[in-house]
Each structure stands twice: as structure tokens, then as C-alpha cells.
Length: 280
Image (cartoon, rainbow, N blue to C red; front, side, top):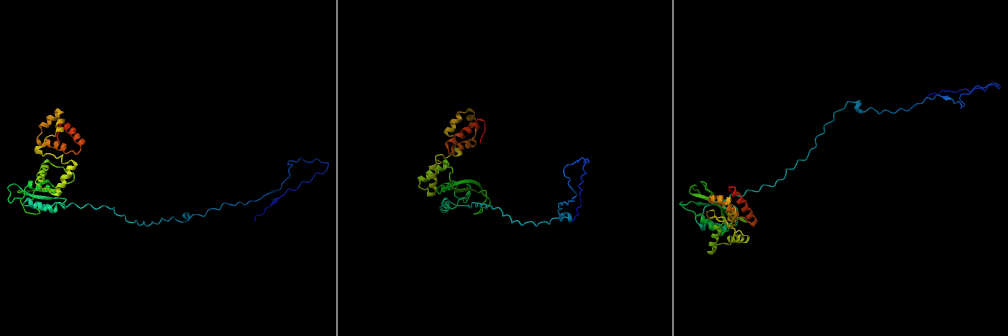
């Protein structure tokens, strides 16, 4: 413990009576002066951090967290390609008719019919016979192509035969006037079958029967198209210079329009094209 040394002033003695008292500079009582040595508490210093006392160690690399494998995106399997139509050769119309009686409703992709060219021996059924037979069962002819050297049914040189596609008639398919006439003959002879008659009834009900188109060999501009052409001299003159094969695309598109407004729009567009000397 620090020793405190106090220094005290002695009280001055009073002067004798009759003597003048000295002037008192500080009337306040004289306090004793005590020198006190104070000990102030110093703020304790924080202990040095480990970073200053020891060398910083590099952080240990953390092992990567194992991520669950991403699931492969689910993709719907691609639809299986439709089987290629088989190729058949029938020596006569009754043979084709017998085959259709069994398979007309179970062969949606149709078949390739191998037909002999004129003068080939032995001959197959003819193209006209094949079309008439197909109409009875609700089928229709389609694409034609050359016959390969060999086929799935026979080994026939390509120069003597060709392939004709026949398929079930699809919904909303158009009718030609030639087939309308063929059906009329079959119906008159009582040769139409239920499957074929169902296709005819559907076409009559939705107007496709009435909109049957003429073949290219007999196609003429329908009355409303012809009237529109007469109203435009340039279009009428250019249309008159076109051959049958160039006229037919215009006529076919007008005749096969399903709605009246579509037909009118096509006629306007075609007249404009013809007036500019253009074809389809």
C-alpha cells in the first residue's frame, strides 16, 4: 500500500494585542493540502489472438458433397413407323375382290397393287377393274410408281408392270366425277357393298359428292370463275392462252373449295394472278 504523506500547515498564532494584524489574503479557511497518489485502473488488454501468435494455417479443403445423379429427362418413345405397304399381284378382279372382302377393314396403310402393262403375258387385272373393285369396298387408288425389278410377291421385269397404291378412303377425301359415275353404275347393277356405300353416304351428307371435280381431260372453268374472268380482260386473255395442264390447277382449286367464302377468295386471287400473267 502506498504511503500517503500529508503536509499540514500550522495555524498562525494571533499577534499580540495592540499590534496591527497583517492583511489576510484568503479569508477562506486554509485547507490542508494532502498529496494523494491515485492508482488508476488501466483497461486490460485483450490477449493476443492466435493469428498473431502462431502462423496462419491454410484451410483444409472440404471434400465435395456428393450430389445425387440427375435423372435423365423423360422422353416419350417415338412412335413406331408405320409398316410399309405390302405388294400384291392379282390375276383377276375377282381375286382382288376376295382379298378386299377379308382385309379392307384391317389394312389401314393399304397395299401396292402390281399391274401389268398393256400386252404383257400373263396379264393381271386392269387398272380400271382395280378401281371399280376398290370402290365397292370403300377403297381408292392413289400414287403410281414404277415397278422394281423384283417385288415381294413375284420376280417380274420392271418394263412389263407398274405399281398402283390402293388405300381405304380417308375422312373428308375428295371425290372425282369419274368415280361418282362409276359408283352410279355399280349402284344401278346392285354391286355396291356396305363399306363402299357408307363412304358414298358420308360424301353426300357433307357436300363432297356435289363438289366432285372433273378430270383434267374434261375440266372447264366453272360458271362463277368464268364470269370473274370475263370481268377482267387481261386475265381472260391470258387464261385463254394456257394449255389444259396449266388451266387445270386453277379449276381444281376452285371446284374443291369446301366453303363459299373460300371459293370466292380463290377466284379473286386467281383472277389477279392471271391478270399479271402468272400461273400456279
